[in-house]
Amino acid sequence: MHVFNDPQSRGYARLTGAVYVTIALAGGFSILWVPAELHVPGDAGATFTNILANRGLYAAGIGGEVVILIAEIMATAMLYFMFKPVNATLSFAAALARLSMVGVMAAMLLFHAGAYALADPGGALASFSEAQRLDLAGLMLAVHDAGVWVWQIFFTLHLAILGQLVARSGRYPRLLGHAMTLGSTGYLLDTLGATVVTGSDAFDGVTGTFLAIVTLAEVGFALWLLIRGPRPATTPAAAFA
Image (cartoon, rainbow, N blue to C red; front, top):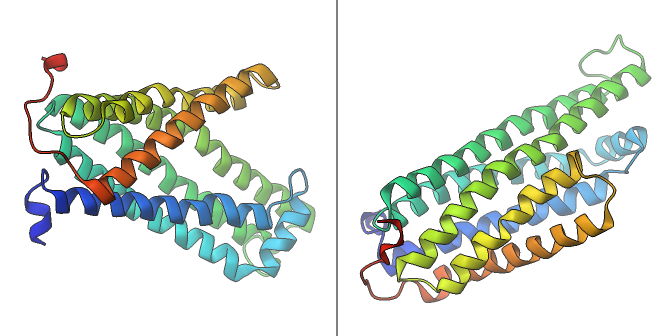
């Protein structure tokens, strides 16, 4: 466990990068692939028929989300100590924002489990009609999905701050940090596009541009941590002084 003793070491950075990669892989499976295989947009009946016919895949998706939560907790703590020397207050604020995101994600899992229980004919509320159970289960999934729009607000704040900590650290590429801060707006715009500014192709195009920027920045930062690690220690820029 000695690798955790020095947050400024290359080994610590590489372990943080490995945690980032774990989040990306588990997220690709649980958040993207599994829903694409099981969910039928606009048809709750077909969706839950798929879920009940592929219980193992659905459970694996939930398991992948648990892996994400564990990895996110580790990433939150490790990033806090990594960038604390740059600015302790802002590093703590970034950690709180990311931990708030994790809390929302954890709550979302309860709705996933509730939807599964309601969709199972032999499970909860068996006395309800199939239509009633599917309506309730569909509501559970809708609330779960709405959680995305909530955690993206916290993640926007986290990345905006983290990007500046990266840029001002003197140990990582400034371009990656500034791109992270700029692109973080994409998550907030995505939430607004789903809840306020709906049906605008122009707005969606702008959102997609910012999301592409932040995705490249996050992947670049994770790979830099994993492969290169930090540069030799220098005095951080005094932008936060």
